[in-house]
Each structure stands twice: as structure tokens, then as C-alpha cells.
Image 1 (cartoon, one colour):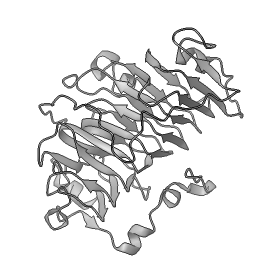
Image 2: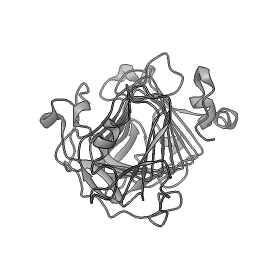
Image 3: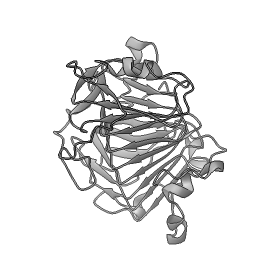
Length: 327
């Protein structure tokens, strides 16, 4: 991400991973499907690297292929190009299957290229995996997971990093369920229409949760449903709910529990008052120490119960093809 003017903050060290209801569980191990392509860094599978398994799948396949990744830390850049749709990555366990690299925008030449895992293909799914960028808290923009394909589903995953952890972008639709995403500055950012349901969003230090660049033509950008914003290194009142990377940035929080790290005003205009007339920021049913509806900026809105009830993963992501990722 190379936004207009990036603010820098002192970043705190990550807190140890803690389990709360709705977070990926270490006790839940995935079963290896009989027809899966097996990856094991220790050599018991068909391939030792995830990328080799991806490369083995023919381009433009209309058949869904599952790659089962056994527990281990896979230190490799992973790319699923647009020519390889219908791929599912299934980890043996969320905490045990780790896909990681340590590029940054400066070492890789751009924020996009810094991604440890890049997904451009449609109909992609990932379950029970940790996606990680280990560049560190002072490295600047360093993406753990880049997603631009349409109809992407992530369940029981972790995305870990600091600045720009999850680049959820493109014109497609994305669904994140029962997952954990952590970072500091703009750590969920981009132009996609994405729903985060029953997720834990962990702030490791001072910064901004979102930096959406939603196109004006899109009704929805990022929607958080029944999720939690937790402080894991961030001080009290040091984190904003979001700021607009582009003028029509759209972010909605519905029934979200917010810890005390969330600032009372909630939203930031990125140093441009013109954004206050165009950014689309909404809340409903926020709870916790970070929920301060009367203190929020005047240009953010509170939804009515009827408006909030009409916003579901299905209604946000249906599109023209009626896609329902919750099935």
C-alpha cells in the first residue's frame, strides 16, 4: 500500500496468542481428504512445498482441487494466479500449519509484491492455516495475505503481521469466518467487498484497523458482523476504527465488541476534511469500553435496527450470481 501520506507510529511487540470464543482452536485438526494433493515439508506427501503443489494443478481447471498441508512452517512466497481457480488450501491445524515469508514493500518493490501469500484466482478457499509476514514491527508495509479474486472464503485462519497485514482488494467478494487478523497500521485495507463474521481483530499497537479504498459504485466495502476488536499491545484509546484510503471508503461494524484501545471519536479523515463528506462509516450495536456512539465523529452514522438486520453475509456478498458463502 502506498497511500497519499503514511503516518508512522511506534509499534509495540505482539502479545501472545490467546484463545477466545470464536477464535481458531488449536484442538481442531482437519481430516485429510482422500483425493487431496498432500504437502509435507518432511517428505511424506506428494510435494514438499505449497507452491509446487499449486503449480501441479492445470490452468483453468473447473474441478475444485484440495491441497492438504501438513503441520509445519513453510517459508516460501506463495502465488495462486488468476489462471488457477477452484483451489482449496486446507491446513492440518490453524496454529500448526504456517505459511510465512518476510518481504516488505521496500525489499519487494511494492506493497503488493511484499505479500507472503498472494491469491488472484476466483473460487479460492483456505481453512485451518496461519498466513504470516515476519518482517517485524518497524519494517513498514509488509503484507501477510493478498486477496483479489472473487468468491474467496477463509475459515478458521490467522493472518498475522504489523502494517498492512491483510490486503483485501480488487473488485471481488471475500468472506472471513471464525478467523483472527492482527496488526497495527491499516492492517485490513483495500477495495474488496468483504465480510468478517465471528472474527477477532487484534491490534498489536497504535494505529488504524481499516483503510478501505472502496469504489464509489459499491454499496459495501468491509463489513464486520458479530466480531471482536481486541487490544493486544495497543494502549487505551490509541486505535481508530478506520481511515479512508480513498474518498468513498465504506466500513460497517455491526454487533461488534470493542476493547478500550478504540478511540472515542472512532474514525480519522486521513488529514483531509473533504473525505468527511464522502466516506461511508457505520456502526450498530457496538459494545465494550471502545463503544462510544455519542463521542463518534459527526460524519459517521449509526444504523437503525432495521438497517442493521438487513446486512448479512448473504445480502452483502450475493452479487448478481446469488453467492452465499455461509452454506
